[in-house]
Amino acid sequence: MTEMNIAIAGAGGRMGRILIEAVQNAGDARLSGALDRVGSEQADAAAFLGKPAGVPVESDFGKGLAGAQYLIDFTRPEATLKHLAYCAEHGIKLVIGTTGFDEAGKAAIAAAARKTAIVFSPNFSVGVNVTMKLLEQAAKALSTGYDIEVIEAHHRFKVDAPSGTALKMGEVIADALGRDLKECAVYAREGVTGERDPSSIGFATIRGGDIVGDHTVLFAGIGERIEISHKSSSRVTYANGALRACRFLADKPTGLFDMYDVLGLKDK
Image (cartoon, rainbow, N blue to C red):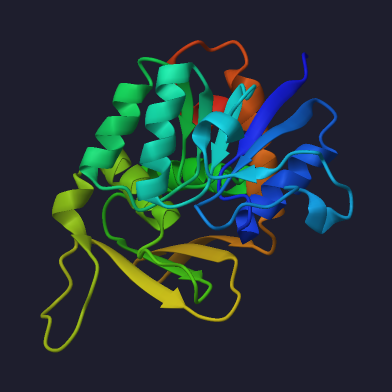
């Protein structure tokens, strides 16, 4: 495979640095650019590794994305949408791991995919996406007599809740059951709530410390319960999944894809 020229958005952040290190360690990729907000510019994006890459961190899109074939973006919705518009106009492929988009943001991503190729996923962990497939199968088999709850835990710095991964798990389950998550999701319980609606899918959110990301789906029946869990101990798995997504996009001129496409998990 030809070497991939990859730029990283949010280069000075925790995930940005992990992505830079992953690109630097990949035999088929080259760090071609790095973006961050105004005031965060740096002389070298890989200086923290002790191995300068000769790639400065830029706030100017034209400079930071010059020569890039791909942009990996795990930032915030408002920043990603700005990067999205630029990349769509300049034919730069996108791997988007940002979460917290509203419906208008998701529509903008879908529109941009008519101009360039995009992998958009709330979670790039291979393990999480295999877990999603297991949840789809479990939901179909446990469609009656089981209450479904999604419990997620993340670090204290995460700004959106429930997590994009938890919401995606809920969507996968709802789709498997023929339900609309917007109509059956329950995000909060307090006071006298009455008996649980058996058609609902509940969500519980935990924030604390340095938890990378834990997700558990509970299928609770009478006399038994099934728990399907995924626990992340390092963000490196997300970076490796993002690189895998770049490789997937190599021969895709346009289109909107997700990690099910990348991993070949979609039903034929």
